[in-house]
Length: 537
Image 1 (cartoon, rainbow, N blue to C red):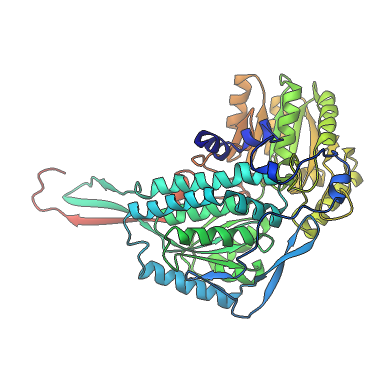
Image 2: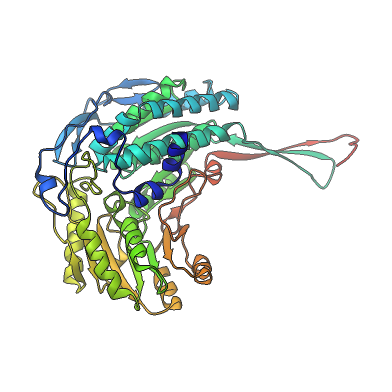
């Protein structure tokens, strides 16, 4: 069982690409029956009642769930229907101020940074145990609020959340400084200290995983946190934060504010008593966050932003395998993935065969209620994203790309969109340049490796890329030539806890996960003292 959890946590790719339709375990209790693929039947059935209750809808400040200062709430919606799941406290400037005061006091006066690193690690390990104990509830909340398939949440994402927390728990007592030699009689220590109060803003596409990517390293390094959830998906972060306090986290160390970007998000980014900021979201919003941080107290910022990742299929590829992997690279999580392989470059020798097989795979994709066993694709997150994706589809049609499959909404209720494929896509088309963030695959043709390198790099983004080839020299050439932060060769979306993730160019700055993520939450201090008659230097 432990080995299975590690596999799910370490390799999202293996769980979801190699076995997209799970045939046992937790999901069996939710539903059974035959699904009609790429038909409106699954979307028009009555939605399945989620097997979880919503218990936490208030703000979490100083260890207590409290109403917002204004008393206002906002609805969080079920993307399967557009109906209200719950009304959640709407945090604003005053609530951010209250949370920052609590976090500052917890850092300056509280026990967390003064605990031994081993004590901090024990709390994080206990937290991971509680995550596993409440796996089903967390997965159900994530699916209900976000629309992603329950199997994906229960079998991969929640186990990965626990794995990430154990990874950072392991780092907590292994963060140390250095003693460095100086050109003279001086004793020089290099200390790695917690940075202080960290402001963190997470997105809606992977709420729990982005929570772990940010909260884990910040806590392991001894910091305190004010975290703002995405307004579309506040529920799972509130639930899991309650578990973290059950594990023994002191009051004020983690404060969670649900609210909107222009109010709560802007207040956090520009707060003068926040020492560090981390943001995941769109590139345009990232620019605003960076400017607010600079105009306030010049706090350091890590940004994980947008992407338009190339997925390159060479002429020596096994076409059937390449089609399946490219399908996963784009359509995973309803296409709502910053590193989605959204520019599928296919060599001209295998292009026509690839397009036909990609069409057949898209038509077989199982779309429907994400709580139903075997569903591969649920709804988009909300009406705004739903409408945006449909506008991009229209743009593709209007610009002359060939609509191979899909192209419209799926069913008549909720925010479902048909798996959509365009062929004959040209680099200058909007669908080949802008981040769609939806189930729309653009297939482009190329002639040789030099051409595809140039075209793949001709983007303002540089988050990730995929390469499918049987030639080691080709793989090595592309690995060094493509200007991206992550490059997957004959695989895609492999997200181990130890692998750093981040982008080149306008896909962000800094790295999350792995040892590099710790650097985001540490200050480096040099301490120099004179030595009198040293025995050695």
